[in-house]
Length: 146
Image (cartoon, rainbow, N blue to C red):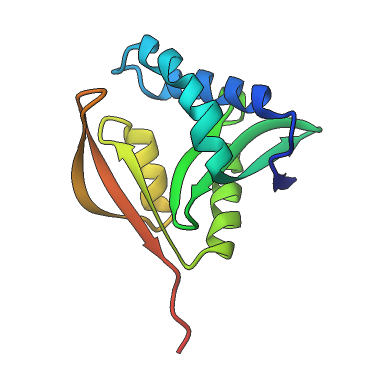
């Protein structure tokens, strides 16, 4: 089941974000993610539209969209990766927004492959000053009906 993030669920969401982001980015110091928790918790998530995926009433993934066009986060708990949850969350937001973009670390091959599979295309290369790693800016556009 997919629904909007509700008040009181931030701790659960941050727990998924922190574990998943550390696992997905072994090339970045764990300390960076721990230091980033406050801004994710207090700025990015509150400014975003966030949907959660529930499995047996437990949050196992989430997606956040900033300014109705930028996917700032898509994370799934480790035991649930590869079970279609990320795809379901992505399909949910693609049904709501006609175009989306995101930034992904170039070294996060699994995520880059996933986004390609979801119809996203690389638009440009960027650089993350905080982590000193290159990223891809990727975008997706809904098919125009004739």
